[in-house]
Length: 375
Ligand SMILES: *Cc1c(COP(=O)(O)O)cnc(C)c1O
Image 1: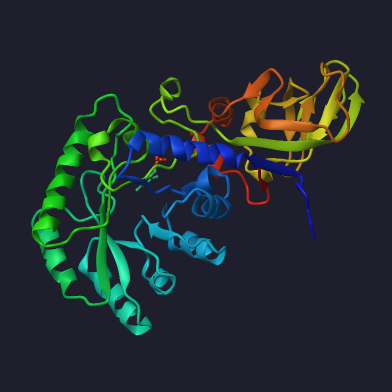
Image 2: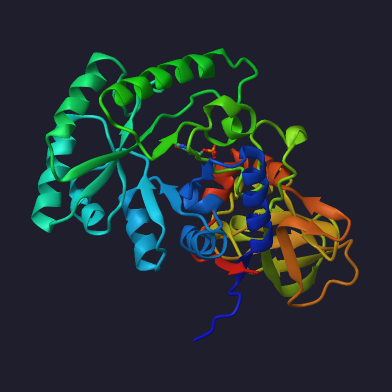
């Protein structure tokens, strides 16, 4: 059954994703590859669809996700590039990860033994990336004695192969770059330790989006941007030096139009009270789609026929906007929740400000039943 665009849909312009990848490639130059980060559901754009597109149409050879669950979903969707899980892996996920040939981080013996045993029992060899602790104190092994011991130990495990080494910068967006340089110093120590033990990882990666832009000397074999790929330069909007484009528009539909009189109310518990006669449009989405009802109180709006229509209230699956001043609005017209419409625009920063969240959270929160349409 073709459900078409559903009640509400995100339209993702794949040409812009590809162009963003190519702009990043132009910036990092030959000898370094992009490992796009598909976390937060690829910034809400749908990680399976985006993974497919990047592997099939953009020559991406490795992507990064947060969890084994996501990696397995990508495999099931037929994405056949390499996949790295970046975060710590609960033991119950190891079997599936090994079965699907997923790259995982390693930073302690216990996990290495577990993976090694699983690899042996499946007759597989598992590729691991040594995760370095350089300042986040989340997951990782410190350079120096700890790394030495771990690497010596890993060498004795026939079921695993160390193919990568990485770390994560904790304040790469800050104006003061000194801690990033400090972390890079520790990372370099780790690289020379690995080198002295005869390990030459094919995947050496430190830079997230912000650092991909400014930290050229830390690019190594791969950069690991999330936001840049999705058209967002976290170094600040005005610093979008790579000319990246945000590829998403979010739409819903007008399902009803009505005139109400002064004194009538709208929504549950008579939430909105009209003090004049007005024209109200009902829209085909609600907070069940990942929108935040709080923005109703904050004067949030959508765009209809290129004009701003303020929310009056929002239910789980439907919402109400004031279209008194929009003359030509018709049943089944599109409402733009995010993106431009005529002269008006709700850009990502306005949108996340309305939702009162960071823009990645705002995008990641867009619900599963919002259809993703790729063009
Ligand atoms: C989220 C994340 C990234 C990508 O972050 P962006 O700032 O979106 O580029 C890269 N590496 C790790 C370990 C991450 O958690």
